[in-house]
Image (cartoon, rainbow, N blue to C red):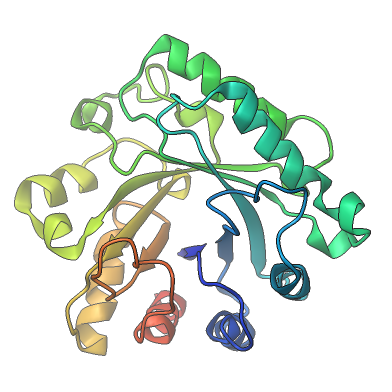
Length: 257
């Protein structure tokens, strides 16, 4: 398994150290990290000096992939704005004259779950902007609809009527731990026909669990997806803005798994 980390933590001195410590201690665990300076790349051409100083440190770890955050507002955002934000990330190294600011792809947040042809064409253009050319090292694309519909999870041909063929990873489920445990949700997430290495699960509001139970949770998530993120932070809109006390335990559980 691997970690998909929404790194929305402002990088003041030492703030990203939990990630650096985990990446160094667990070289066999792959981290795909989403940087999000201003709910996107910021209105100007570059983020502030603190980000410019910290993002290059991510490049020093072979097991960290870095993605830039772009929201599509479920494809209601003007496509030209989405493409412009992609270009902004692509131009960071040239604008700052620092090749270590190069990101490896784009994390598209707030993407649709139900298939609509017009929305597919919108996301196809955005994804091809990342996939074509050399602006992004891995040309890596992630979609986060937050939840995939049950009809998609049960169909034997999930790639024919979905956005899955546009992505390297799609977030299968992003919700509270309690909702993940609900029998209807839990069972449907485990019965899909999609390759697990194409999927991620993000759970917040995790209760206080022993390491043994946490290992079990990681194993159960792995039945649905090869990528995960777990946090015990439960305050709305703060789930990904600080490192959870259980972050190191989660990484250790993934490494053990």
